[in-house]
Picture (cartoon, rainbow, N blue to C red):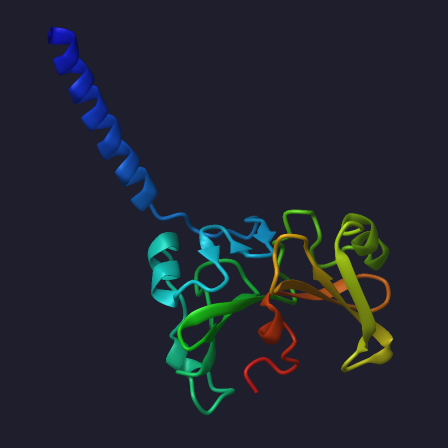
Length: 184
């Protein structure tokens, strides 16, 4: 019977520890890999308040975004003290897409990031559906490569290139990834 007492105490202790581990914030760094469904503990389709809780990080004020008339409908948030040039599009308070621009160093779990040679995208995602089109802004001087991964219906990777290398990435829901001007 004494062994049963210790077994119960051990089970309770392990349960309490597991609960605390699940509640421990997991910040996003400039090396956190980006998945087609999110980054770190943040997932596409997650309410913004949950993302704040799971990362434990401070985000910019969603109401401060000035490129839209209605920040409740569509806005962007960034990390004032986190990864540079990584932003999240919120649609009605839900994370819809992640933008990776300028100097961001985050890469996809498959290894694609800013500066990756364009030819590597086709090799890395050879088992995925790939759509290639001329750049919306640069015409034939750039390309837009959209990747749909098996098992991730409705989500996309979108890579903008200058014909040689990746110069921008957008990850998220199909509809929002296709927005050319962000929230506009």
